Amino acid sequence: NCFDFFCVFITVLGWGLGGSGAASVLRVLRLARIFRLIRKLKGLRMLFNTLLISVPGLINIGSLLFLLCFVFAILGMNLFGKVKFGENLNEHANFRNFGQSLLLLLRMVTGEAWNSVMYDCMITPATSGCDDSSDCAIGECCGSQGAPAYFIAFVVLGTFVTLNLLIAVVVDNFSNQKREEEGEDVTDDNIKEFEVAWRRLDPEVTGYIPLSEVINLIKETPPPMGTYGTNITRMGMIRFMKNLNLQTGDSEYLHYQDALSAFTTRAMGIHVNDLSEETKDEVKQSLSVKGKMSMQSLGSAEALREHVDGASDGRGIAVVNGKSRASLKPGLSIVKESL
Image (cartoon, rainbow, N blue to C red):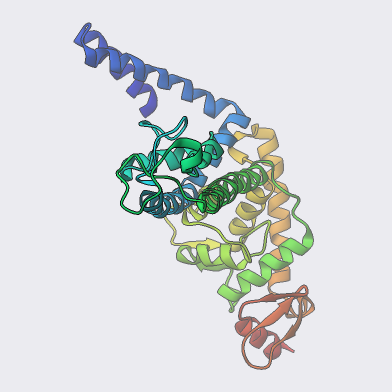
């Protein structure tokens, strides 16, 4: 595959370049072979996928952290830019300019000696011989007694809030990824909810919907078979579509039984292509039987009426299984016509 070709290519290229610096860099790139383990180790693959899915959220929170550091760096330059150096506030960690302020704040986010820097920014003439006049020279001024408010506010917002948000994003995505890998049981109620969602997109019960409506079907179907009521990112939706592994050939339409099988296997964490031929046939046969029964139920107006507890007063909102759902007017009109 492409990855194997890349490893072999840089190896040959490194031999061709001899002992130059570029060759050394290429030899280091051969360490990328270790990523082949990701495909073989389920736990490692899960962690790697979690990292990829978390990237958009991490970028957003990282931008928020940078904005927070930007504001506090400018504020720190105005408050402590002239303070006399001490043991921890020194030439390597200070608020003399924006760059140094930003680096110091980034260090403080990790929790390293932030309280010691705070004490150095609170010096008085009695403790360090600094100049407390308003026109003191740079590097000779006293600190501010308001330093605790500045430093504690930054540590709370930067460390205890922002960094914990990063952890929360990763943990949440890991939980979702683990649920996708291991799967959940699909009950008859879940299939009924899928039928209701399908009926919204196929009110005439033709058994087919355009492939362009698959995303809407995903959004209208409640978990574990869909994503209704959950916040899913664009990357998450792409992974969802990929895991469905829809087999439609050249057709632009999706059949109900094919959709039900794809949604069910994905929800239960079954990777059909990884199964033995015997097991694969058993799974397909079981899903086919379930799909035919559900297809018959889908065309039954009585079944749909039993699954719809009530509808709103003309606004197109219905309650399905006790939960508010999107517009069911097309499905309800068919029920009324058939009754």
